[in-house]
Amino acid sequence: MLRTPLPWLAALLVAYLLVPLVAFLVRAPGQGGSATAAPGVGDALRTSLITATISTAVVTLLGVPLGYLLARSSSRTAGALGVAVQLPLALPPLMSGILLIYLVGPYTTIGQFFNGALTDSATGVVLAQCFVAAPFLVVSARSAFAAVDPAQLDVAATLGHGTLSRTLRVALPIAARGIRAGMLLAWLRAFGEFGATIVLAYHPYTLPVFTYVQFSSTGLAATTVPVLVTLGAALVVLLIADRGPARRAHRRRPVRLPAPRPPALSQGPVLDFAMAARLGGFGLAVEHRGAGRNLAILGASGSGKSATLRLLAGVLKPQAAEISLGGRDLAALPAERRGIGYLPQHPTLLPHLRVWEQVTFGVGADPALAAFWLDRLKLTDLADRYPDQLSGGQARRVGLARALAREPRLLLLDEPFAGLDAPVRDELRRLLRTVLRETTLTSVLVTHDPDDAALLSQDTLLFADGAVLQDGPTRAVLTHPAGPAAARLLGVRNIAHGHVGADGVLASGPLRIALPEAALNTPAWQHTKAPTAVAWCVQPHDVRLVAAGGTAAIVDDVAHLGPVAELLLRLGGDDGSDAIDSDGDAIDSIGHTVGHELTVTVPSGQEPEIGDRCEVDVPGAAVIVWPEV
Image (cartoon, rainbow, N blue to C red):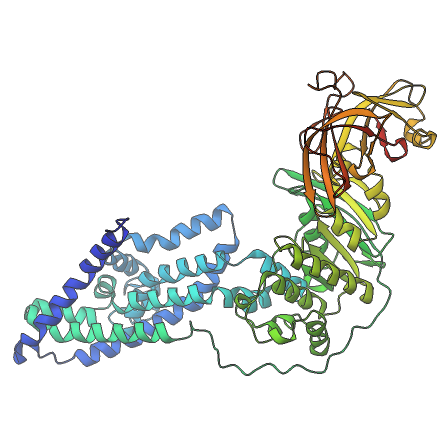
């Protein structure tokens, strides 16, 4: 018993479409020879085949560019034009023919210019067919182009391809399957067109007009041969289309890689930038003055990290921008002339190209250098594969090799490890670290993981809500966040509020932490008075469990994380009633009230059990404090 009515509904439609055809084929052999004689059917077939082919060629030549422009534009004009182009679909074909009479009829300006040759001629047939068939091609092409990932066009731009090249070598091949479907629909619609044709060009006969004449003059039996011929021609065209260019060419010659050439090593140029942009209601303003070659931009999702990278790549237009790479002004150059390598969040490989063709796709890509990177990134054995035959990690490495094959001066990496399994992510991260070290490339890495920044950058820029929170050497940023928001971005678990008294003691809930003089001898403290309201943080690995002399706590949770165990401690009394005072009412990055709870890590095997009592000590030297404004 079927669990869904879908097969029955589908079968009902199939039956409705096929039963008339079967009934005709069963009855056709019984027709008398004189009744089925149809002199002139060959000429009508030839006319329909030629005019439908010409019409399809015309609407393809004009409709594909129109579909591309409509897909790439979101303006009201494009929307109105898209509706207007589909209007012939809503009109009865007879009405379409009447409208065409107003344009190319024998008494119109255009008709008189051609001496009335645009009607009652093969030209008239083509004009009628183009009018009714064009929407099928345009709608299909528009949908196919709309499905092209904009990031694929962006990457092609950073690989040196101009607007026309991106259209012909990226958008058109990707949209080809949809365009071919539109061409087939347009040809079939033109081949079967009757209403507009009979109004605009009664002669020469097309198959539909010829069949109508036979039916009106002799009766149903006289239509047998024209219908058989029409069915046969349409079936042949459909079979050819099904077995045609939609199938992937598997018989290409195997790739022969040239001798590899390693990249020329030189000190990477320093990158400085100051940029501003508005994306809808989101404003972005970012500035960085380079010190090291490798920069990491770290922030939460939606903070503007990827937009910053796209501004650097030149595929997003800024309101204002200053971008200097080793003294060269990039802001004035289009993306295709900036000489950069760009790896977006998704590899954006081109589905119609094999790995070797992907890697050498960039303008000016050196095949010998491409062969080197295929070998270096362990891709040589995959050179003949298509993108759908690659794993996620392999596709990322292909995208990286493609970016490096042009020997860029700047490499932009947008979340290159997102969505990868832990072993693959670790392998690719280590590989990329080696590449950056060996090539001395200047790079910008967008990430949300502080470990990525620690491994792959010399400078780190913390980003939130389109603005810079902190910018400086990676080690300094990771160990001394500039405030609570920066600490949360870095994944610090223990963040709280409290007061620092004249004696330099931090009071936060039940905790009393003696701060070293160095922690209070900073510019931020010069204009403060005791007691000072502060925010503070401490890393879980800096907190110690002690036998005595610490703050009482109860173990609420234990998480085993391989070599370490993470403890969640509830500070104070058994019920936590005395754990919070007015100074400790703050929420950490995971929603816990710090001062009430504290996260601690200890070596695996040394952890207490859930519910155990313990004492905890927070070293003042490990605490970072910020005066609250």
